[in-house]
Every structure is written in structure tokens, then in C-alpha cells.
Image 1 (cartoon, helix red, strand yellow):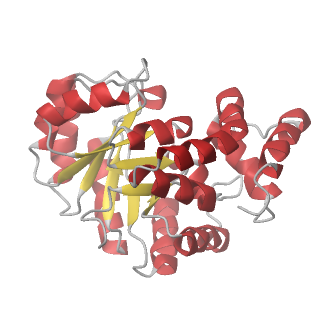
Image 2 (tube, rainbow, N blue to C red):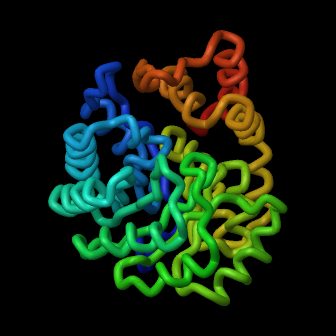
Length: 299
């Protein structure tokens, strides 16, 4: 039986291939989406941080959503990131995603002036008021520099379309303890990101994992998630260990930069990250290629 929402299992986050003018390459994006559908991911996280949503105009985001939804054809739910600095912009992006056929929304509280907890709540309340699509709260302090308090998460969980939260890995590594606290206060599907914590989070009982690697190299991540969700800790740890060299490159260079190298190494496309992000140099590329070579036959 399928999961009851797009916020369970493996949500795979592809990059959004685009030229240096920010024009989205719909054909390459469709190839990535097709890979994810064929691999059996549980949802596609379009226009997340890996998808460099903050670097794209509203028009290009619309083009990306259209390409992904057209390719997915209902086979896999498409969850669309709608983060924006202004509330009215986020509302417009929510409407665009719904019109284009997205299945769900994902929103981070982008800001320049640091937001208060009340300001973040009003931002989410306003956006949920313009779309009936289920929404996942995107808690990503590493990029937004905003930290959700438990009281704010509890308030957000009462909004009618807020159904999930995407959490960073806890600093102390104790996912089970954090899940216990969260489940005691909020009735939401709770997922995590930070790929090296995939096995730990799912074995501890998380509902979902939001994966960067899964967006480009889905098959081993699908295997890892399935093993962990069925409680096969031995198999989950084995797969996790085989992926450890790639996790190390994420930590050393940033996962987004690594994904652009993987895309080329796998022969899918040659695309540069949006400036001012710079492509990785030869030494890093060689390290990534070596890590990938250890997964021969599983890419």
C-alpha cells in the first residue's frame, strides 16, 4: 500500500540544470526526473536547496515545475519548493506550483532581515491561505539562518495544510530523542536531511528522508531507505558504509557542488552551478570519481 502522503519515504532532490543566464534546461531536468521515477523514489523534491531555487526567477521556476510534472505524469509526487524573501512572492509561487500540477509544497523562511518566530508564523499562515496543497515546513538553518522553536512548529502544525517538517540532523546525533520530543508536541510527518544521517534517521523512526544524492544517484539511496524503513539495520549500515566516501565529499565541498560533478561523471549532462558558486577543481573531481567508482553497477 502506498504511503498516505508525499512526505514519507525517500524524497529525492535533483539539481535544476540551467545555463549561466539562469535559463532552465527542461530536457536535462526531464531526464533527471525520469531517472527518479524509474528508480522508485517516493517523491521528487523540486526546487529545494539542491535545486538552487534562490537563484532562479519566477518564470524559470514555473518552467522547471512544468517540465518535472509533465515528465513525472503522476507516477511520483512532485513536491515544489516555493521559498522567497517576500510573502507575496511565496504566495505567487505557491499558486504557480498548484496550477502546474504539483502535488505538494516545501517552503523555507528565506530572509535578509532576521525573522522573529511570529513573523515566520505569519509568513507561513499567509502562504497556506492561497493554496490547498499540503505543505512541508523546510527547517534548514544552514542556509536560512533561521531556527524554528518547538513552540513555532507546534503553532504551524495547526495550520490546515501544513502536514510535514523537514529537519536538519540534530547536533548531538540523537535523532530518536529529538523525534520523541517532536512527536509529543506536533502531529506532522517528520523527515530529515543531511545525507550521511539517512540510516540513523530512518532507523530511529523518521517518516522521511530528504536526500541530495538521491536526486542524481537514486538507486543506492532507494536501497538504503528501503532497508532502513523495514528495520533491516545490518543492510542499511552496509549500504551506508559503501556511500561514506561520497558523504565525505559532501562535508568537504558542499553537496550541491558535488552533485554538479556527479551529473557530468555519470554522463547525464555537463552543467555549471549558478554563479557565484564555482565548479570544483581537478583534485575534488578526482576524489568524487573515486567515491563513485566504489559503487560500480549501482548508479
